[in-house]
Amino acid sequence: MSNLNTFNLYLLSLKKSFQDRLREKKFKSSNYNVSLGGIQPHRIYESSNIFLIQDLINHDPVILNSVRKFTTNLWKITNLEENKTKKLHNFCWLPALNIKTEKELGCLIVDQWINNFSNYTEKYWTLDVVTMRLIYWISSYEIIFKNSDLIFRSKVINNIVKQTKHLFKNISLVNSGLDKIKSLAALILVGNSFEQYEEYTQYGLKNLEDELGSFINKDGFVKSKNPEDLFWTLYFLVLVKEWLILSRKQTPAFINIYINSLGICFKFLRFSNGDLPLFNGANHINTEKFYEFLEARGYEFENMENIFCGYAKIKSKKIELFIDANNPSSMLHSRNYQAGPLSFELASGDIKFICNSGSGKNLGEELSYLSSSTAAHSTVTINDTSSCIFQKNALIRKYFGNSLIEKHNIFKNEFKNDKEFIQCIIAHDGYEKRFKILHERQITLFKSKNHIEGIDSLKCKNLENKNLTYSVRFHIHPDIRITKTMGNDILLSSNKGEGWIFRSPQIPTKIEKNLYFANPDNIRESSFILLEGNIENENTKDRKSTRLNSNHTDISRMPSSA
Image (cartoon, rainbow, N blue to C red):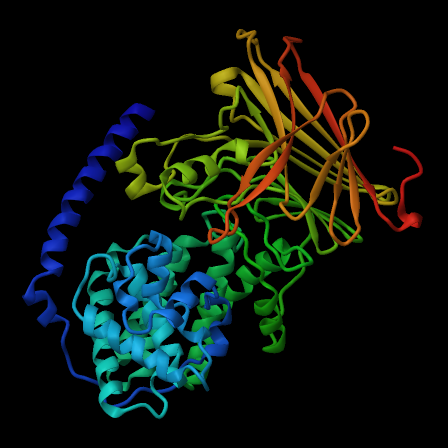
């Protein structure tokens, strides 16, 4: 069945590739360019501002340096990475300019861009780039429009109309989910900003409700199971609401309903330092400014505990631990899915110690595939294979991303919150079909001892292959120093003086090098702790255990013995 699905996906990818080539010819034609013209609005309303999009502003020093250094030939730069070129052309850096001292610079560069790229250009008029460029231009009202030359204003508005029409005509081509939500938000903003284009607001709101209904599950969580997608979906919904308020328009009821359900998930998944866990395609994002904005504007969300939206949360005093207990999403929502079942992230206070590696989704095919593997997560692998099998065909991956050939299933999910401890037991069958092995993970936090015990159980069903190996990886955050002590213990220490002792009584520990992808603008070297060995046939289970002991510099909190 999997071979048949792969073949069908390949045929569908070929069809999409052919359609793309035809579409490119159409977009580059003079007739298409003429079709993007229309009535130019008389004025632009200040329906957005820079403050609302603070978390969208990119402060990448490479981009900002290029902007400030190459003012006369910025658009002739060709040596930037693809990801940075996209950021340059979507103008995510524009609101980062100083309104008082760099307004003239911002207007000059926008003017130069229009002179060079006013008509459709394959690289720089992709729908995702157009979407964000519209949001950044309109949100930078004080830089581009306020007190600017009328001829320049008219020139910018005319190009905004062209880009908006291009987006509107082709919005069905945008991937469902978050990308579609962003594009609809851009149309709503344009409609709010120009009286003559109110129809875009109405269209955007109507289709936004339908898209949210398809993208959000009954728990109020995004179907991609990706905390980063959760953040941006909530963020753009709040943007839309605030834009409508600024325009003195009524907020539809569905927006408030979805903001509330997403907000509950968001509050549940936040570490105390504002980070979100790196699960299922998520990269690092600190939500502190956005959280403060929500509080200041009166957004309040119910507090959930234990197990919610497919994740288990263990929290006591300063210690926070999240475990991925999600089943994979459908192909439609698994473009950036990662095979990390039962992986976990651990933080103490505002310091993250154990994590996953993040996503290489914007770093090319090889790193994207590598970061999606189970080995890039703090969990168990068998024979160094992933618990899910992804498509490897480059053409299929171009159109469908990490479309899964085989998926795991979570078949046990138990949670206990006792006076003395908090315990979570989760199991998945991702290795059952290939190796007849089930993986169960038990994590227990002893409240009074600042002590965490983890037990990984590999339950074998009629084990035939006697050459199977297991690997247990614990990825360490790159800000943490890792030191092997006398014996088999490993010391994890932060620059704030807090330390944890990692101990494995039964299995030798190793420290190996790794890459941390969570910040795509700055891939960092990191390390992971490795436990490995052969799986022995014991009919019922092969049991491996590890321990994490907190060892704080505050003597009063130090355990009396390991």
